[in-house]
Amino acid sequence: MNAPELDHREIAPYDESQFVSRIEEMVKEPGFEHAVRWVLPDVDYTQFVALLRSCRNKREFQVQIMQNFLERLEAHTTSGITTSGMENVNSEKSYTYISNHRDIVLDASFINLSFLRKDMKTSEVAIGDNLLIYDWITHLVKLNGSFIVKRNLPTRQALEAAKQLSNYIHYAISEKNESIWIAQRQGRAKDSSDHTQESVIKMLALGGKGTVADSLKELNIFPVSISYEFDPNDYLKAREYLLKHRDPDFKKSQHDDLFSMETGLLGYKGRVHIAFASCLSSMLETLPADCDKQEVYHRVCHSIDCGIHGGYKIFPINYVSYDRAFDSDMYAERYTTEEADKVTAYIEGQLDKIDVPDMTIQERNFLRTYMYTMYANPLRNKLIAAGYC
Image (cartoon, rainbow, N blue to C red; front, side, top):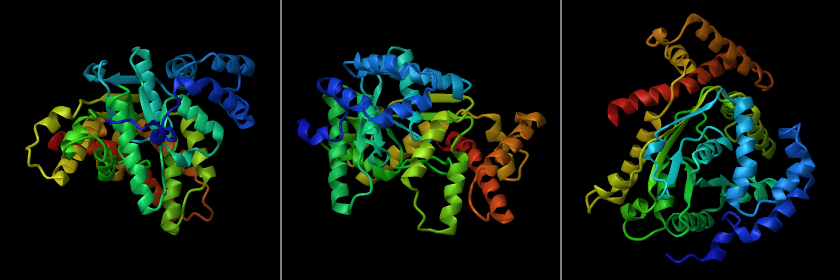
């Protein structure tokens, strides 16, 4: 495939020739210094900037800056990150990792941290341009190996952007030998019921050569699931759901997006588990030659969902929430009374944070059920996957 760099440059990560100049631009922005001091209150900013200026490529930036930051974040906001299935990843190959989407920033970051710890190559990360509110954010994510997904475009421009994105992803996999990460859907599943959007797979198939199956096979699609014991943004998702219930035209503001990013970064997540399934290329190779492209999309979505749902780590809050959401005692033996009481206290505490004016008792009861369902859905989907995948 030809690689028209000028067509890719506006969405691609920075290459080595841009590193020095982009770092200089970033560190001169007052907003960047403010953000660093806010996230790392004990930082020696002068020393931090000197370390940044010493980075000459993405690997150095990730090892010297991001790995240390993410490990500090892990220590302060989680009870540890565990992994399974990494033996299924061939370090000589490049993959398109597709995962569920819990956190705006950390899903791909924690996956890449797992690679850094094994001295494996990290993936480039898809990030929506709606999050690039300031220039320093654009610089930061592109230095860290992110590529840009254009959002909220008119239909014709959206199709062109999708082709550009797909071509870049195929180029990254086939010619740059870089893995990439992309979420299975646009935006996070507000109720934590994760299902692959067919539009994502259709976008991936726009690039490449041959049939739809050939194009997708070229990408080495690899499902990954990420499980957070606690979702720091759970109450913000519930708040948004209520506001949309009150006003179907409600839309989040840039402030809402920034606050979600901050909350996801710094909020407590409990235990975190990342499960690598297996590459779907062999499945695509077994499809009949005359397989209709719609059937290909369906099978790929189903296989990704099976890989993600089957990899969920189930915690006590998921068992308790399932029984509460569906008025059952099916999993009563999987948790203690003390664990159930802690879940109750946690959910009520999160509901107390929802700052919606004039919330009625009925609305609070509704949101309570919604939040229990949010934590029950990974277990429910794992059960379905066990029976149908």
